Image: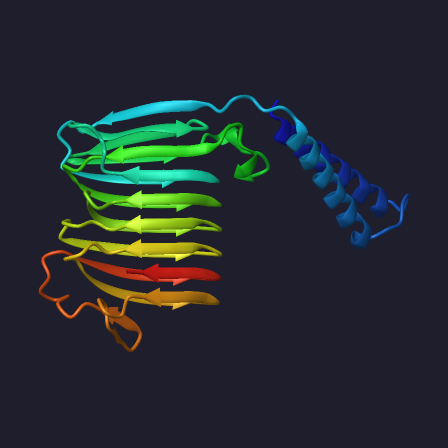
Length: 264
Protein backbone atom coordinates (compact mmCIF):
# COMPACT_ATOMS: atom_id res chain seq x y z
CA UNK A 1 0.00 0.00 0.00
CA UNK A 2 1.29 3.49 -0.82
CA UNK A 3 2.23 5.41 2.31
CA UNK A 4 0.25 8.50 1.37
CA UNK A 5 -2.85 6.30 0.98
CA UNK A 6 -2.14 4.76 4.40
CA UNK A 7 -1.74 8.19 6.00
CA UNK A 8 -4.99 9.57 4.60
CA UNK A 9 -6.83 6.37 5.46
CA UNK A 10 -5.72 6.53 9.09
CA UNK A 11 -6.28 10.30 9.31
CA UNK A 12 -9.83 10.16 7.94
CA UNK A 13 -10.71 7.18 10.10
CA UNK A 14 -9.50 8.95 13.26
CA UNK A 15 -11.25 12.17 12.30
CA UNK A 16 -14.51 10.35 11.61
CA UNK A 17 -14.25 8.48 14.90
CA UNK A 18 -13.70 11.69 16.85
CA UNK A 19 -16.66 13.37 15.16
CA UNK A 20 -18.86 10.33 15.83
CA UNK A 21 -17.90 10.28 19.53
CA UNK A 22 -18.59 14.00 19.75
CA UNK A 23 -22.02 13.54 18.14
CA UNK A 24 -22.82 10.81 20.66
CA UNK A 25 -21.79 13.10 23.48
CA UNK A 26 -18.91 10.89 24.61
CA UNK A 27 -16.38 13.71 24.09
CA UNK A 28 -16.88 17.45 23.94
CA UNK A 29 -14.76 19.81 21.87
CA UNK A 30 -15.17 21.59 18.55
CA UNK A 31 -13.36 22.35 15.29
CA UNK A 32 -11.11 24.84 17.08
CA UNK A 33 -9.44 21.80 18.66
CA UNK A 34 -9.82 19.28 15.83
CA UNK A 35 -8.13 21.34 13.13
CA UNK A 36 -4.94 22.08 15.15
CA UNK A 37 -4.68 18.38 16.04
CA UNK A 38 -5.08 17.41 12.41
CA UNK A 39 -2.47 19.91 11.23
CA UNK A 40 0.01 18.84 13.90
CA UNK A 41 -0.41 15.22 12.85
CA UNK A 42 0.04 16.02 9.17
CA UNK A 43 3.12 18.12 9.93
CA UNK A 44 4.72 15.35 12.00
CA UNK A 45 4.03 12.83 9.25
CA UNK A 46 5.63 15.08 6.60
CA UNK A 47 8.69 15.63 8.81
CA UNK A 48 9.04 11.88 9.26
CA UNK A 49 8.80 11.39 5.50
CA UNK A 50 11.46 14.04 4.86
CA UNK A 51 13.99 12.25 7.10
CA UNK A 52 13.57 8.89 5.39
CA UNK A 53 16.22 7.76 2.96
CA UNK A 54 14.93 8.07 -0.57
CA UNK A 55 15.62 5.77 -3.45
CA UNK A 56 17.82 7.07 -6.26
CA UNK A 57 15.98 9.11 -8.85
CA UNK A 58 14.38 7.13 -11.64
CA UNK A 59 15.51 8.42 -15.04
CA UNK A 60 13.67 7.29 -18.13
CA UNK A 61 14.60 7.90 -21.75
CA UNK A 62 11.80 8.29 -24.25
CA UNK A 63 11.80 8.72 -28.03
CA UNK A 64 8.65 9.11 -30.12
CA UNK A 65 9.01 8.75 -33.93
CA UNK A 66 7.69 11.44 -36.23
CA UNK A 67 6.52 8.96 -38.90
CA UNK A 68 4.27 10.83 -41.39
CA UNK A 69 2.91 13.46 -39.01
CA UNK A 70 2.65 16.99 -40.36
CA UNK A 71 1.45 18.60 -37.13
CA UNK A 72 1.73 17.72 -33.46
CA UNK A 73 0.13 18.64 -30.15
CA UNK A 74 2.47 18.10 -27.19
CA UNK A 75 1.18 18.44 -23.62
CA UNK A 76 3.63 18.54 -20.71
CA UNK A 77 2.35 18.13 -17.13
CA UNK A 78 5.40 18.76 -14.96
CA UNK A 79 5.79 19.26 -11.22
CA UNK A 80 8.53 20.73 -9.07
CA UNK A 81 11.98 20.43 -10.60
CA UNK A 82 13.59 21.53 -13.83
CA UNK A 83 12.08 21.51 -17.30
CA UNK A 84 14.12 22.12 -20.42
CA UNK A 85 12.66 22.06 -23.94
CA UNK A 86 14.44 22.83 -27.21
CA UNK A 87 14.60 21.84 -30.86
CA UNK A 88 17.23 19.11 -30.53
CA UNK A 89 15.18 16.04 -31.53
CA UNK A 90 17.07 13.88 -34.06
CA UNK A 91 15.82 13.56 -37.62
CA UNK A 92 12.54 11.65 -37.93
CA UNK A 93 11.89 11.87 -34.21
CA UNK A 94 8.98 13.94 -32.92
CA UNK A 95 10.34 13.92 -29.39
CA UNK A 96 13.45 12.65 -27.68
CA UNK A 97 14.35 13.20 -24.04
CA UNK A 98 15.27 12.06 -20.55
CA UNK A 99 12.88 12.29 -17.61
CA UNK A 100 14.09 12.35 -14.04
CA UNK A 101 11.41 10.86 -11.79
CA UNK A 102 10.03 8.91 -14.76
CA UNK A 103 7.23 9.82 -17.12
CA UNK A 104 3.83 8.53 -18.18
CA UNK A 105 3.34 8.93 -21.92
CA UNK A 106 0.20 8.69 -24.02
CA UNK A 107 0.31 9.02 -27.78
CA UNK A 108 -2.52 9.27 -30.27
CA UNK A 109 -2.68 9.71 -34.01
CA UNK A 110 -5.51 11.52 -35.81
CA UNK A 111 -4.78 11.65 -39.51
CA UNK A 112 -1.68 13.78 -40.00
CA UNK A 113 -1.73 15.04 -36.39
CA UNK A 114 0.23 13.36 -33.61
CA UNK A 115 -0.89 13.98 -30.02
CA UNK A 116 1.48 13.38 -27.11
CA UNK A 117 0.64 13.71 -23.43
CA UNK A 118 3.52 13.48 -20.91
CA UNK A 119 2.98 13.65 -17.16
CA UNK A 120 4.66 12.84 -13.87
CA UNK A 121 3.89 9.25 -12.76
CA UNK A 122 1.05 9.06 -10.27
CA UNK A 123 3.13 7.41 -7.55
CA UNK A 124 6.02 9.88 -7.72
CA UNK A 125 4.43 12.48 -5.46
CA UNK A 126 3.12 12.50 -1.96
CA UNK A 127 -0.03 14.16 -0.65
CA UNK A 128 -0.26 16.05 -3.92
CA UNK A 129 2.98 17.92 -3.19
CA UNK A 130 5.47 17.15 -6.00
CA UNK A 131 8.54 18.19 -3.97
CA UNK A 132 8.20 14.85 -2.17
CA UNK A 133 8.94 12.95 -5.36
CA UNK A 134 11.16 9.89 -5.28
CA UNK A 135 13.60 11.58 -7.59
CA UNK A 136 14.24 15.03 -8.89
CA UNK A 137 11.77 15.91 -11.64
CA UNK A 138 14.41 17.05 -14.11
CA UNK A 139 13.03 16.75 -17.61
CA UNK A 140 15.06 17.54 -20.72
CA UNK A 141 13.48 16.98 -24.11
CA UNK A 142 14.03 17.93 -27.70
CA UNK A 143 11.20 18.44 -30.18
CA UNK A 144 11.14 18.16 -33.96
CA UNK A 145 11.86 21.19 -36.13
CA UNK A 146 10.09 19.59 -39.09
CA UNK A 147 6.42 19.95 -38.07
CA UNK A 148 4.05 22.64 -36.85
CA UNK A 149 3.70 22.32 -33.09
CA UNK A 150 1.07 23.25 -30.53
CA UNK A 151 2.70 23.17 -27.10
CA UNK A 152 0.75 23.03 -23.84
CA UNK A 153 2.91 23.28 -20.69
CA UNK A 154 1.69 23.04 -17.09
CA UNK A 155 4.25 23.27 -14.28
CA UNK A 156 4.44 23.71 -10.53
CA UNK A 157 7.27 25.11 -8.41
CA UNK A 158 9.87 24.65 -11.09
CA UNK A 159 12.73 26.13 -13.10
CA UNK A 160 11.66 26.17 -16.75
CA UNK A 161 13.76 26.88 -19.84
CA UNK A 162 11.84 26.71 -23.11
CA UNK A 163 14.07 27.45 -26.09
CA UNK A 164 11.62 27.43 -29.00
CA UNK A 165 13.77 29.53 -31.35
CA UNK A 166 14.33 26.77 -33.91
CA UNK A 167 10.87 25.23 -33.63
CA UNK A 168 7.70 25.84 -35.64
CA UNK A 169 5.49 26.48 -32.62
CA UNK A 170 2.21 28.01 -33.77
CA UNK A 171 0.48 27.88 -30.38
CA UNK A 172 1.95 28.00 -26.87
CA UNK A 173 -0.12 27.67 -23.69
CA UNK A 174 1.85 28.04 -20.47
CA UNK A 175 0.38 27.65 -16.98
CA UNK A 176 2.80 27.90 -14.11
CA UNK A 177 2.79 28.38 -10.35
CA UNK A 178 5.63 29.53 -8.09
CA UNK A 179 8.32 29.17 -10.71
CA UNK A 180 11.00 30.81 -12.79
CA UNK A 181 10.37 30.52 -16.52
CA UNK A 182 12.35 31.76 -19.52
CA UNK A 183 10.87 31.31 -22.98
CA UNK A 184 12.71 32.05 -26.22
CA UNK A 185 9.99 32.35 -28.85
CA UNK A 186 10.18 30.96 -32.41
CA UNK A 187 12.27 32.86 -34.93
CA UNK A 188 10.58 31.68 -38.12
CA UNK A 189 7.25 30.01 -37.34
CA UNK A 190 5.09 32.57 -39.13
CA UNK A 191 2.32 33.36 -36.66
CA UNK A 192 2.62 32.16 -33.05
CA UNK A 193 -0.17 32.53 -30.50
CA UNK A 194 1.04 32.68 -26.88
CA UNK A 195 -1.13 32.45 -23.76
CA UNK A 196 0.49 32.61 -20.32
CA UNK A 197 -1.15 32.17 -16.90
CA UNK A 198 1.18 32.52 -13.92
CA UNK A 199 0.87 32.83 -10.17
CA UNK A 200 3.70 33.89 -7.88
CA UNK A 201 6.15 33.47 -10.73
CA UNK A 202 8.91 35.10 -12.71
CA UNK A 203 8.27 34.88 -16.46
CA UNK A 204 10.71 36.11 -19.11
CA UNK A 205 9.72 36.07 -22.78
CA UNK A 206 12.41 36.64 -25.40
CA UNK A 207 11.33 37.71 -28.89
CA UNK A 208 14.06 37.02 -31.50
CA UNK A 209 15.28 39.88 -33.65
CA UNK A 210 13.21 40.22 -36.80
CA UNK A 211 10.07 38.90 -35.11
CA UNK A 212 7.21 41.34 -34.45
CA UNK A 213 5.05 41.13 -31.35
CA UNK A 214 1.78 42.27 -29.86
CA UNK A 215 1.56 42.04 -26.06
CA UNK A 216 -1.44 42.25 -23.72
CA UNK A 217 -0.91 41.85 -19.98
CA UNK A 218 -3.46 41.50 -17.16
CA UNK A 219 -1.70 41.62 -13.81
CA UNK A 220 -2.25 41.77 -10.07
CA UNK A 221 0.67 42.77 -7.88
CA UNK A 222 3.26 42.17 -10.59
CA UNK A 223 6.31 43.94 -11.92
CA UNK A 224 5.84 44.44 -15.66
CA UNK A 225 8.76 45.21 -17.97
CA UNK A 226 8.31 45.44 -21.75
CA UNK A 227 10.99 46.69 -24.16
CA UNK A 228 9.17 49.80 -25.40
CA UNK A 229 11.93 50.53 -27.94
CA UNK A 230 10.86 47.41 -29.85
CA UNK A 231 7.22 47.26 -28.78
CA UNK A 232 5.80 50.78 -28.24
CA UNK A 233 2.82 50.99 -25.92
CA UNK A 234 -0.58 52.21 -27.07
CA UNK A 235 -3.15 52.02 -24.29
CA UNK A 236 -3.14 48.52 -22.84
CA UNK A 237 -1.20 46.97 -25.71
CA UNK A 238 2.48 46.90 -26.64
CA UNK A 239 2.95 46.43 -30.37
CA UNK A 240 5.70 46.34 -32.99
CA UNK A 241 5.29 49.09 -35.61
CA UNK A 242 5.47 46.47 -38.40
CA UNK A 243 3.26 43.91 -36.71
CA UNK A 244 0.61 43.83 -39.47
CA UNK A 245 3.11 43.21 -42.28
CA UNK A 246 5.74 41.09 -40.51
CA UNK A 247 6.38 37.60 -41.91
CA UNK A 248 7.04 36.26 -38.41
CA UNK A 249 5.05 37.53 -35.42
CA UNK A 250 3.93 36.51 -31.93
CA UNK A 251 0.63 37.48 -30.34
CA UNK A 252 0.93 37.33 -26.54
CA UNK A 253 -1.82 37.32 -23.94
CA UNK A 254 -0.39 37.21 -20.40
CA UNK A 255 -2.31 36.87 -17.12
CA UNK A 256 -0.24 37.03 -13.96
CA UNK A 257 -0.76 37.38 -10.22
CA UNK A 258 2.04 38.19 -7.79
CA UNK A 259 5.33 38.00 -9.65
CA UNK A 260 7.17 39.58 -12.55
CA UNK A 261 6.87 39.59 -16.33
CA UNK A 262 9.66 40.66 -18.66
CA UNK A 263 9.21 40.86 -22.45
CA UNK A 264 12.16 41.73 -24.68
